[in-house]
Image (cartoon, rainbow, N blue to C red):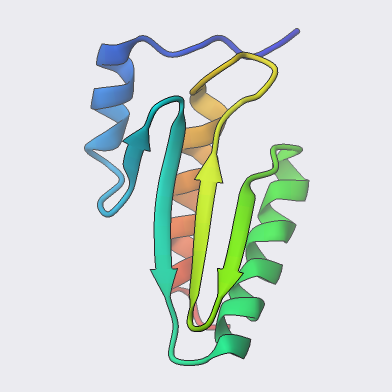
Amino acid sequence: MKPELLSESAVLQQMSALPHWQVEGRELVREFRFPSYLAGIEFVRRVAALAEALNHHPDMLVGWQKVAVRLTTHSAGGLTRLDFELAGQITAAEAAPA
């Protein structure tokens, strides 16, 4: 059973709990900054572990001192509770010591 798409009002409500994240089309996006390239790579490793636990995998683009994260539920064609759940966990992982 695929997750249910969130309504526009539900998306807006969920966004209030996710500072620095933005909705772009059917995706939830955020760019994270780091003091070094390897710190960004360690962050990607932590996000990958969270994604595996939820079986919900973001697209990530690694650059010098930055990582862009894009979340969407491909099987549903847009944003679902899974995207917001993982975004919250990613935000917490950013603040946690490596």
